[in-house]
Image (tube, rainbow, N blue to C red):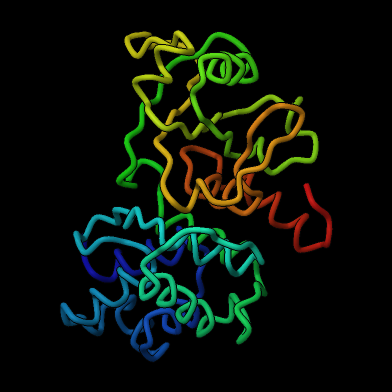
Length: 257
């Protein structure tokens, strides 16, 4: 992919203006404009800054960084406390970029949940994170799956769009994401079979220090924090980001989904 197509694509995917991307990367907005017009061929240094600031690896194919530090930074901006030792330099790097782009203010509180969520999600795509994971077909409500995990003593926490809702213990889910301590153990406990190929899927993923911070119990079901659930939704497959946008809009309007 040529540089101009790459830059335009990363902007459109993230819902960024030329000014947004320029601020994230610390370059002039005219630089972005000239690259997209094809009148400027960026140096590798500039291209690397653009990719990294927008949440992509320096591979030239818009692969997510899979960076859990972006999730931590977004949760901090959403007012959540992270009870884990993290790479502070990486977390602070995201916060500083988002300040420059005005997604958060100088006190590190969110100004635009949608743009913050989209950027954090791009930088931490579920299937690009280092966590162990397995997506499998399931044939029963996700509530039954977590009940089986709990009865077998498997630690878990539900994430994704379902976990952003006030009625989350009863809701269905388009794409259940469940964090667990051990994916193989969870598959066995819930009697989920990876070889099945047809039907809706649930993703089991190993806990990381960010996701494991702030777990809450509601009606006997463990959920990740609302902020974690929102960013995981932005980082999910298919239309999950669109559903996350709807949640972000409600949050910006002052209501919790």
